[in-house]
Image (cartoon, rainbow, N blue to C red; front, side, top):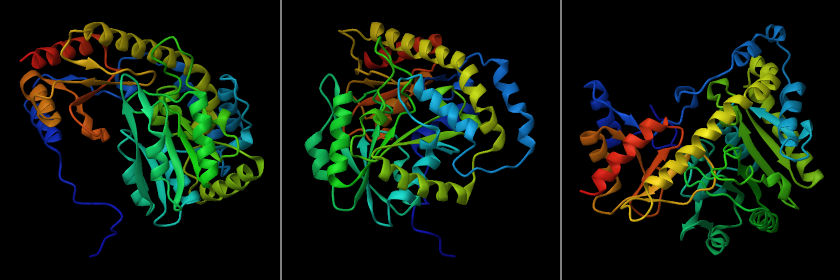
Length: 389
């Protein structure tokens, strides 16, 4: 039997996953510094979130390809609260940001076309693109005390078959963000080269310092066609609700052409459930309480890390501006894989290696800022003990 060659189907399990399975089977203690599921991170979810799903209209099937009008208006109101003028007409609902990427690749690309993605970043782009017969090429983010976009390398990566540039901002896992002038420059470059800008803004509500929420590319579109992605998974910590959205910006004629085609794609799948669409206004309203808890957790944890890793610590906390993750630079006395295996097998600490996110060099560890503070501090002290030898 022949299967599609879109993906490498025979990927072996990595050594860290195997070690984790062994430790769990043996009942060993695990200080999990990778927890990115907010529903398992000790937050309080208001009862109103559950009641919102009991809308009587959920028993009536009345499909709307781009999403129910009331749900799309609720998303538009979310942007209005961030001082962005986005109409409900500019919103298309999807079941997840992964599905949103798949739809955008369908919209923008023919088989063999190219999409540019940042490095380091979200580890699923290759798989999502491969399933659409699209190629991912990378442009680098550099670090010199602050993460910055290498504009010359980005220009060199653009080709006549580049159909879109992905900006993940805040970046997962680096926590870097693009300033409004940088977003405008990126949008202008995309317009110049005939490419769309896909701005993944799922962590935009989680600045780690006193800065306001991260700027959206929707406010900097200019002549570029811009697609901003977000959803319930991060905005209110409800990944299980399976609702995300694409907000489309740019010149009206191009924007309308994109929306018409996106609606046809969405109509082909009709993947978003009726109950969650009808509940969306209440989920976004009541979910603000969850968002505030997450905001306090990630800010507090990042401040704890900064205090515990102040010089002359052998472990360096890399600068981050927003998001749910922190990156630690550890001594290159062993490989990242060896670091993670040592921490797990000898000290019961679970962290992710930088190569999971395609860091260009070693040695980095990625940890989640959703981790309960006591667990985070205990795990970090064991990392420091390991670094000290």
